[in-house]
Length: 516
Ligand SMILES: Cc1cc2nc3c(=O)[nH]c(=O)nc-3n(C[C@H](O)[C@H](O)[C@H](O)COP(=O)(O)OP(=O)(O)OC[C@H]3O[C@@H](n4cnc5c(N)ncnc54)[C@H](O)[C@@H]3O)c2cc1C
Image (cartoon, rainbow, N blue to C red; front, top):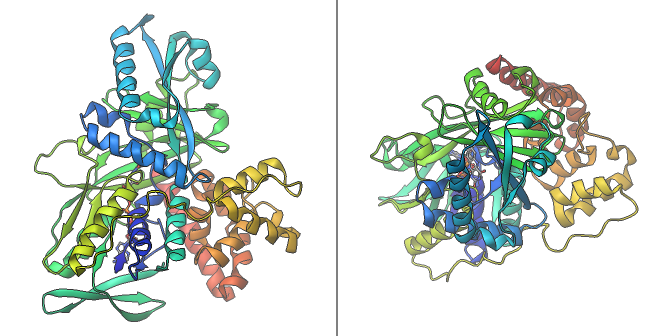
């Protein structure tokens, strides 16, 4: 099987296929998770709002998958409480709204939320304020707390890809499919470009997991562009944690829109998102606009005492949801997050839609379809209890590391934290920070190029670490030093090293310019 696309869906398909015994290869044209899978809200969740849209089955499946993720990737996925602040209007508590949330949270718990082992509960204003002291005290009537979970999306994708390799798959990033190889009407492989060379990869079945680019890959097979996907843009902004001071996540309403956005603590920052708008621009690098940023600021400013402005924003990211185009042209926010698996007459299997949370199920469905195409009896998916790489028993803290560094490393690498730590033993300079103000160690960048297939400065600063999302300017300041650190391992000449730094800084400049 050849899988096209190294986002969470493609990585999931490679893992599912390899663990069923299929000889599997995956190619990703850029970096693993460089598409939508590094730009999500980073929640492994059922999605409270999908219940409002009566998508009970979807929420049930997602909450089931949330539990699988918590058990199979305990080092990466962590339970996160969410605060639903209840605000008064004109000094009066809106009892209807209170009941509405209470009912929705009961329904969420009963649809599978309870699997997490905790039940939602009502809290008073003081407790809500203790969780988020920046809330407007005079309008705060209390709140609810419920439970979901959070993950570093890019690292989850990478962990799935690495687990696929352990199960026997071959995976390659920076390797793009440029054409498909046909034998009569059947697709029997693909032409890929790797390091400037064209290679023909033969496969009995090709699975197209190219996310919002899936129609482009289908066009290589079908000759015409099917336009089956309706890309929906979502952006997030990062704020210094000290400006929000929330010790748990919160969901807050957007004034004048019937939507809520998440306010999620992440290290020394808090991110706010997301928007949900139709998008018809170029699919690579969708922009964050000043209007997108204002939309999110209006939401958080609607419930806080002190008002935040665009000057407080220290990072942004924008991604495109690969939603399925349906006949009805409603708002993208109202479109279903269901997934679809389609088999073309050529045998190409295309898997699209869905969510980060439901990747395992999407993968199982896609591999079932692929097995039928090649007439193999692979048996059912085996990933239900398959631990992801790094998640098999976490090492206890050692005296050699500060407890906070131990927690930082195990929360990102699981059992591999020891390998990262050992780099700092061989070379103590690698224990120094990678980017000023962020917890990443220089050893993590070395680990990224030696063990995680990072090939560019952006791979290291955007996805192996999340420095660009957490502190855009500091990451640009560190770019030259990080490139110098990576150059010997990646065999960069001085010119190549400088080109990496220039490209990274240019991308950051463009990001800054978009929102100013
Ligand atoms: C703003 C936002 C917030 C979200 N929040 C959440 C959330 O909190 N929880 C949740 O469960 N879901 C969330 N989602 C949804 C989730 O992120 C996506 O459903 C998921 O990441 C899609 O993954 P994918 O692998 O299908 O696509 P992608 O991650 O985009 O992967 C497709 C890959 O295919 C590669 N590719 C394209 N063409 C080729 C080619 N010719 N050759 C080789 N490779 C190719 C691309 O480079 C890309 O890496 C969110 C989405 C958005 C946009």
